[in-house]
Every structure is written in structure tokens, then in C-alpha cells.
Image (cartoon, rainbow, N blue to C red; front, top):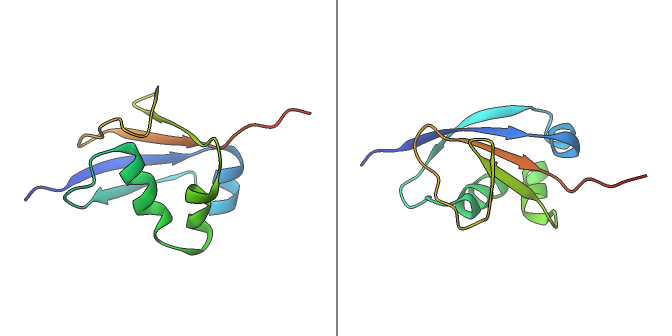
Length: 87
């Protein structure tokens, strides 16, 4: 069994809430989609649950916007962007 390692980046209010601009995450077998990565990280509890709670959270894989069903591969860069409010 080979594990995939990805880089995860957090932007704007999400970065502030989590207290980190990003991290390296090792994905367990079966975690193959963007939705799976989001659920894995949110499953840590505490502030990490914000990933699951945010409506309209946008995400990108390798600097391209992607939908939750998009496949994540070893070495990919995943970025999460919270909704931006104008004002």
C-alpha cells in the first residue's frame, strides 16, 4: 500500500482561523478526492471543523479550480479558499 502525500494551502480567513498557511498531509488509502481531503482534515475537530462548516468553500488542485469529486494524486498541491465577502 502506498500512501499519497500532498501539500495543502489555506487562504484568507481560513488561514487566520487555523493559524497556518499550509501543511503536508499524508492521505490514507481510499482518500482519493478533494471532498475526501476536506473531510479528512475537518475530521481533526476543533478549528479544523471550519473546513466542513464553510459554505461555498472553493478549492483548487495544482492552481486550477476543482470540484469536490476531482481526484487528488501523490504530490498534488491542494488549496482551500473561503468565500470572499465584499464591502
